[in-house]
Image (cartoon, rainbow, N blue to C red; front, side, top):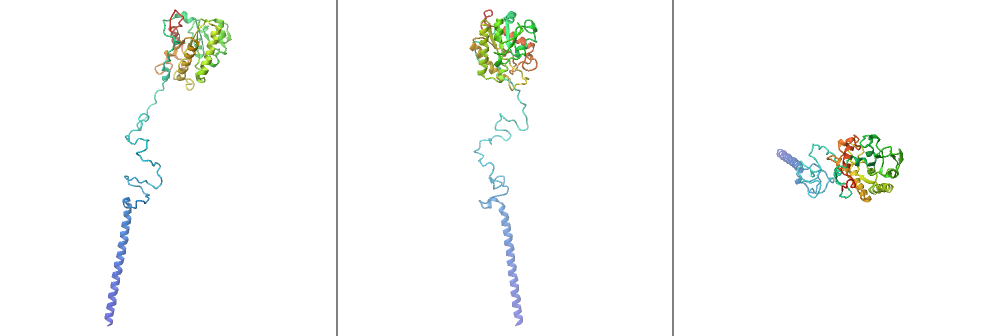
Length: 335
């Protein structure tokens, strides 16, 4: 009886162990399956579509890298800059950008405005036969430093002792001071105004070349007003004098004050000089038209090296233009 009871207890314990082992295996299998299932969540396509992803997305997905608001939120198809249809190797504006890795040399700065012709006007003196040395010797030149240089280069009658040049002793004359500023009057070695000199000498012809300094600080109204006042004061002092207004001369590319005096301003101011000539009923010499190079700068062969003032060659070119664009009273020539 006791032997059978022992056998029954032993069999029961074996069954309990077997069931425990089966339960343990089931737990292990469940854990393993859970772990495998959890690892598969790395595929975004199997996740909750509302879950925020914080890892780097696949290259083909539109999900942002982080949950922060992207810097650009516009749809690429609706933005206007840049043009995303352009070839990656080119820029959207080929006219303003160069190919990567290349540098374009800066274009040579030209002064195209100096090449702009003046408006048509009956005041502009046209080409004539050479009026000759006698005509040149009958002219007095009133002006600034661009006129004063005729003395040291001795291009007029009596050379460096010429009496044909009227400028202040300093050689500088600005348009805004031209009416009242004293000039050196070589006939009497006196310091007088231009009108006083004209009254004393009564020259046959007077060529005025002024305004190059004025372009740096005078507007059109000031420029024209002061120039007209000067002309009218001389006309009143010497009614028989034939006054001619000459264009302001261009400057060269090596001039060191191009920020204040340049060919764009000079070309504009020459239209003002022409306006003064028309207002006063006197001729205009467009000498500037033969002094510039193909880029609009004062020709290198005409300047003394400072970019503004002439050498002897330059003055000879000016005098030749004056003689071949003579006043209409000379020999009956028309302009």
